[in-house]
Image (cartoon, rainbow, N blue to C red; front, side, top):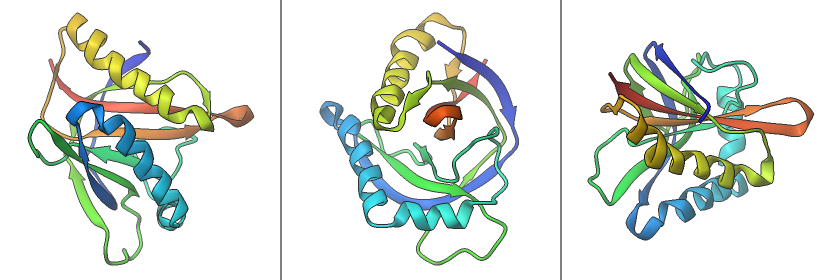
Length: 169
Protein backbone atom coordinates (compact mmCIF):
# COMPACT_ATOMS: atom_id res chain seq x y z
CA UNK A 1 0.00 0.00 0.00
CA UNK A 2 1.16 3.50 -0.77
CA UNK A 3 1.39 5.37 2.55
CA UNK A 4 3.44 7.80 4.62
CA UNK A 5 3.48 8.81 8.28
CA UNK A 6 3.20 12.54 9.09
CA UNK A 7 2.43 14.73 12.06
CA UNK A 8 0.02 17.56 11.25
CA UNK A 9 -0.97 20.67 13.23
CA UNK A 10 -4.54 21.11 14.47
CA UNK A 11 -7.23 22.40 12.09
CA UNK A 12 -11.00 22.73 11.74
CA UNK A 13 -13.47 21.54 9.13
CA UNK A 14 -17.05 22.65 8.55
CA UNK A 15 -19.83 21.05 6.56
CA UNK A 16 -22.95 18.92 6.53
CA UNK A 17 -23.27 15.71 8.47
CA UNK A 18 -24.99 12.37 8.08
CA UNK A 19 -24.94 9.43 10.47
CA UNK A 20 -23.77 6.37 8.50
CA UNK A 21 -24.74 2.80 9.41
CA UNK A 22 -22.06 0.11 9.36
CA UNK A 23 -24.54 -2.76 9.69
CA UNK A 24 -24.14 -5.27 6.84
CA UNK A 25 -21.68 -2.99 5.01
CA UNK A 26 -24.33 -0.27 4.52
CA UNK A 27 -21.57 2.36 4.81
CA UNK A 28 -20.28 1.32 1.37
CA UNK A 29 -23.68 2.31 -0.06
CA UNK A 30 -24.62 5.24 2.21
CA UNK A 31 -21.42 7.28 1.80
CA UNK A 32 -21.52 7.42 -2.04
CA UNK A 33 -25.27 8.11 -1.83
CA UNK A 34 -24.66 11.01 0.58
CA UNK A 35 -22.07 12.49 -1.79
CA UNK A 36 -24.45 12.13 -4.73
CA UNK A 37 -27.25 13.88 -2.82
CA UNK A 38 -24.90 16.74 -1.83
CA UNK A 39 -23.80 17.19 -5.45
CA UNK A 40 -27.41 17.17 -6.68
CA UNK A 41 -28.83 19.61 -4.10
CA UNK A 42 -26.04 22.19 -4.52
CA UNK A 43 -24.38 21.59 -1.14
CA UNK A 44 -21.03 20.72 -2.71
CA UNK A 45 -21.12 23.91 -4.81
CA UNK A 46 -21.81 26.04 -1.70
CA UNK A 47 -19.01 24.35 0.25
CA UNK A 48 -16.67 24.67 -2.74
CA UNK A 49 -17.24 28.44 -2.87
CA UNK A 50 -16.86 28.75 0.91
CA UNK A 51 -13.60 26.79 1.10
CA UNK A 52 -11.93 27.82 -2.15
CA UNK A 53 -9.13 29.76 -0.42
CA UNK A 54 -9.22 28.14 3.02
CA UNK A 55 -5.88 27.15 4.51
CA UNK A 56 -5.50 23.38 4.71
CA UNK A 57 -2.99 20.71 5.72
CA UNK A 58 -3.14 18.89 2.36
CA UNK A 59 -0.91 19.17 -0.67
CA UNK A 60 -1.25 20.89 -4.07
CA UNK A 61 -4.29 20.04 -6.15
CA UNK A 62 -6.58 19.48 -3.15
CA UNK A 63 -10.24 20.05 -3.95
CA UNK A 64 -11.97 22.46 -1.53
CA UNK A 65 -14.61 19.85 -0.56
CA UNK A 66 -13.51 16.73 1.32
CA UNK A 67 -14.77 14.45 4.10
CA UNK A 68 -14.10 13.78 7.77
CA UNK A 69 -15.62 10.96 9.76
CA UNK A 70 -15.59 9.19 13.14
CA UNK A 71 -15.04 12.47 15.03
CA UNK A 72 -17.63 11.38 17.61
CA UNK A 73 -18.02 7.88 19.03
CA UNK A 74 -21.44 6.47 18.11
CA UNK A 75 -20.62 2.85 18.91
CA UNK A 76 -19.78 -0.01 16.59
CA UNK A 77 -22.79 0.21 14.29
CA UNK A 78 -22.64 3.82 13.05
CA UNK A 79 -20.36 6.82 12.61
CA UNK A 80 -20.74 10.51 11.74
CA UNK A 81 -19.61 11.50 8.24
CA UNK A 82 -19.20 15.15 7.29
CA UNK A 83 -18.83 16.46 3.76
CA UNK A 84 -17.13 19.79 4.16
CA UNK A 85 -14.25 22.12 3.74
CA UNK A 86 -11.42 23.37 5.86
CA UNK A 87 -12.30 26.39 7.99
CA UNK A 88 -12.27 29.44 5.72
CA UNK A 89 -10.96 32.82 6.78
CA UNK A 90 -14.36 34.49 6.33
CA UNK A 91 -17.78 34.54 7.91
CA UNK A 92 -19.41 31.14 8.13
CA UNK A 93 -23.08 30.80 7.18
CA UNK A 94 -25.33 29.21 9.79
CA UNK A 95 -26.29 25.57 9.60
CA UNK A 96 -22.86 24.01 9.25
CA UNK A 97 -21.28 21.66 11.77
CA UNK A 98 -17.74 22.49 12.93
CA UNK A 99 -15.26 19.70 13.73
CA UNK A 100 -12.04 20.45 15.62
CA UNK A 101 -9.08 18.20 14.83
CA UNK A 102 -6.15 18.15 17.25
CA UNK A 103 -2.51 17.90 16.23
CA UNK A 104 -1.82 14.24 15.60
CA UNK A 105 0.32 11.63 13.91
CA UNK A 106 -1.35 10.32 10.75
CA UNK A 107 -0.96 7.31 8.53
CA UNK A 108 -1.77 8.80 5.12
CA UNK A 109 -2.74 6.33 2.39
CA UNK A 110 -2.94 7.32 -1.27
CA UNK A 111 -5.14 5.65 -3.85
CA UNK A 112 -3.97 4.98 -7.37
CA UNK A 113 -4.99 7.66 -9.87
CA UNK A 114 -8.54 7.19 -11.15
CA UNK A 115 -11.15 8.88 -13.31
CA UNK A 116 -13.99 10.59 -11.41
CA UNK A 117 -16.64 7.88 -12.08
CA UNK A 118 -14.35 5.36 -10.32
CA UNK A 119 -13.97 7.39 -7.10
CA UNK A 120 -16.06 5.13 -4.85
CA UNK A 121 -14.39 1.87 -5.84
CA UNK A 122 -10.85 3.34 -5.67
CA UNK A 123 -11.42 4.81 -2.20
CA UNK A 124 -13.31 1.79 -0.83
CA UNK A 125 -10.57 -0.60 -2.01
CA UNK A 126 -7.96 1.33 -0.02
CA UNK A 127 -10.20 1.47 3.08
CA UNK A 128 -10.62 -2.30 2.95
CA UNK A 129 -6.88 -2.86 2.53
CA UNK A 130 -5.99 -0.60 5.45
CA UNK A 131 -7.90 -2.77 7.92
CA UNK A 132 -7.42 -6.19 6.31
CA UNK A 133 -3.73 -5.85 5.35
CA UNK A 134 -1.93 -2.77 6.63
CA UNK A 135 -2.85 -2.60 10.33
CA UNK A 136 -2.37 -6.37 10.85
CA UNK A 137 1.10 -6.25 9.27
CA UNK A 138 2.54 -3.12 10.93
CA UNK A 139 3.48 -2.03 14.43
CA UNK A 140 1.02 0.87 14.31
CA UNK A 141 -2.30 1.05 16.12
CA UNK A 142 -5.21 3.33 15.32
CA UNK A 143 -5.50 6.24 17.75
CA UNK A 144 -8.62 8.04 18.91
CA UNK A 145 -9.72 10.73 16.51
CA UNK A 146 -11.31 11.35 13.15
CA UNK A 147 -10.45 9.88 9.77
CA UNK A 148 -10.29 11.99 6.63
CA UNK A 149 -10.75 11.55 2.92
CA UNK A 150 -8.95 14.28 0.97
CA UNK A 151 -9.62 14.46 -2.76
CA UNK A 152 -7.10 15.74 -5.29
CA UNK A 153 -7.15 16.73 -8.95
CA UNK A 154 -4.25 15.38 -10.99
CA UNK A 155 -3.16 16.10 -14.56
CA UNK A 156 -5.04 14.68 -17.51
CA UNK A 157 -8.44 14.51 -15.82
CA UNK A 158 -7.32 11.98 -13.22
CA UNK A 159 -7.87 12.26 -9.48
CA UNK A 160 -6.61 10.55 -6.35
CA UNK A 161 -7.64 10.41 -2.70
CA UNK A 162 -5.67 10.45 0.53
CA UNK A 163 -7.13 8.61 3.51
CA UNK A 164 -5.82 9.95 6.83
CA UNK A 165 -6.05 7.74 9.92
CA UNK A 166 -4.72 8.85 13.33
CA UNK A 167 -2.15 6.43 14.71
CA UNK A 168 -0.06 5.78 17.77
CA UNK A 169 3.25 3.96 17.72
